[in-house]
Image (cartoon, rainbow, N blue to C red):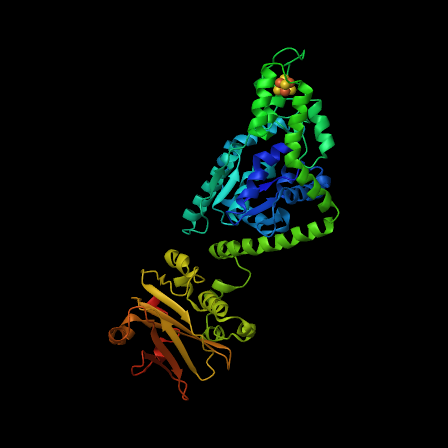
Length: 506
Ligand code: SF4
């Protein structure tokens, strides 16, 4: 995961410092690259008029340089609203002191003294950055050394979140530093838009040649008969970054011996630069003729990014349990047994039948947790962590308040024949919770089966089944509306008393 602020067309410094590296990384990793238009607002909030144009410019340059939407997800930050949501939630847990310590905070305020950066948004931009990275549960962040503090802060936010909410939603990402040669600007200082000394990545070759042709030699070779030192001349530095070894060697010796005229040296440097930029320039020209398609691609890719971001946000929202449905608080207000009976009624959710079993099973288990599981179980500190995680692997047990291992599962059957089959792995669970959805009346029956109820049959079944075979369990409903549980084909027993009896979970 990495991104760039949309500051318009890219220059050679951006390319050598980040973009060329990203192009290589996309063959090795599943990559997400985003244009950070909300970040642009942290400094350009007073005049956002160029941000969209700049965003498109950056996208065209990325594509021209070889970022490939077939390999990587390339998207626009503001199109994925989950960035803002996670930023808000992280803002709640990030101490102010962490932000005031970020070195770039003071530095940027000083460098951009023409802008008022004493804003809440500007102070919080490293939190937005942490959200950008953690939203995709990224493992690596390719950045320059100057961004190290931001990645460190991201790790701290992840650590704080995980430990505060006893979860492991966020991996701690690592900075992926790559050697990025210092590209000299036309005046010898670091190439930067703010110095006005850039060579554009997609500029026409003639323009690049003209710019390099008029570069200063930093006082070297004032007379062409004087020997010079290529290490002190920005053109010499350009050769170091862009020229092949034989040309670099010839330039250095020719400069020192005064046998190479500066104009030829600059011509060679321009050739080396254009060898890299020519194909990028041509591709950009082509892409500019189809900006609608490019914009459409960015929108599609943003939808793809949002789908990935949403996965993370679902886990995060579960932790805060501020979801839109009444969910876990509903049961607290169920005073009468009539209310409790109503809570089993799933008739509003008949659309679930069209879903694949795994999705339906997850929804049913979530529904059970939110609506039927008693509040005193759900809200105990231990079990809150446990029972909010029911969307994990079916076979993973959940711990009750007293650390009992609970297996919660849903039958694949829809109760048409008033029979539900379950497959339970051969592990030592202390409670089975078996959910049966009856299609006829859209009713959810839940049976909480304590170990003492199945231990004998379990032991018998263990003798006849192989280690990794699953134990077959059946629940049947009789004509007289009684429920029976049969374990591994043994004699079935009445389990009416286990229906909606949550005692074993306490
Ligand atoms: S020969 Fe090249 S490196 Fe040497 S001073 Fe002239 S332009 Fe600079």
